[in-house]
Length: 426
Image (cartoon, rainbow, N blue to C red; front, side):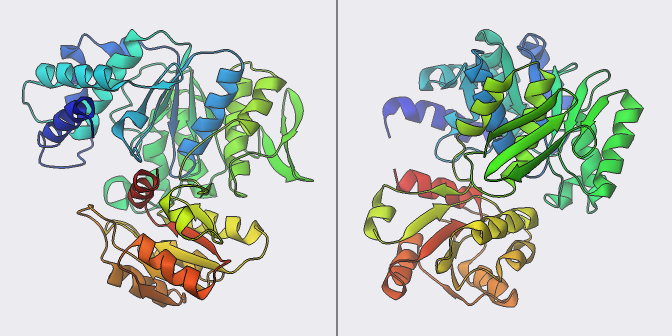
């Protein structure tokens, strides 16, 4: 690590100590620090606010690809990061520079003056400062958790809102039913602002529509106002403006058709044309979402292995992974999984039971909330997946290569594990 890189890391470590709770959903602290900073949230480029349980990052990546292909300068805010914090803040197409990040974090730390504030809140405030001070045409703003009380939900009038599919995750904070979770996500809807709604469960859609009616938001709903489907290896999109026949999304997996539909509906709502929509399908890049690993120490250690990485970690993520694997050419498939102790491990494992020959469970290195490998292994066995523990991802890969040197291997279960793999694998 360079001396420059350690500057922001040191500040980030200090910011983690400012509030006793990692997650404490409220907007009061956010309004306070933004006022102290001169309200940067009021000087942002037109905002496209994105909430949902699954698909936020992929949908945002497709929108960004389309907007940039049309010549627009685009900011983007995402979380969590994988390899380094800088990934969360993209300024006009480029990751924020270390010196700029350290200066912004220092400014926010001074403005906060030691008062209680969560890590996500104060770093979101820093991102707003960066976005307000750097010219751009759009800001793609991803919710951290939920929507209604998320730190990003201080933008009074976004240009557009997008709600990706809602499913179970973070129930301890958002509620334990789909209507409750969907209502929290729908908290980003604003009066007079169009909301793009990806395919939802009926009870989730009802909650979103109720919120839209209450605040006076106009909805563009999948299956009613637009449709997207795969046909002959391509994606067909249809809305009131007419049909689009486009290349299939470059991001792999059947679930990306839903994400692509929402991205295309958003781009059309912004007035973009066919070329931008095609670029959204062909130029999007989103790491650790069924990402093929072709280089680095892991790939080089097992050259005959087809190696993949995915950060899915909830039941819907497990379903998406299972559908993606099922759509691939047949090949013996093994899983290497590490998960957090806050996740629905059984719900993630159940959809994977039919497609994997064996699972090797690992603990996530350096992560306090990791689920012990023994517990992940037990959950896999309970779901009907033959499983054993392994001391590390590299150790598990070695066991698989010795057993099946031409296997397909998917490393999965957590974005934190995915981040570790990307850092270690170059």
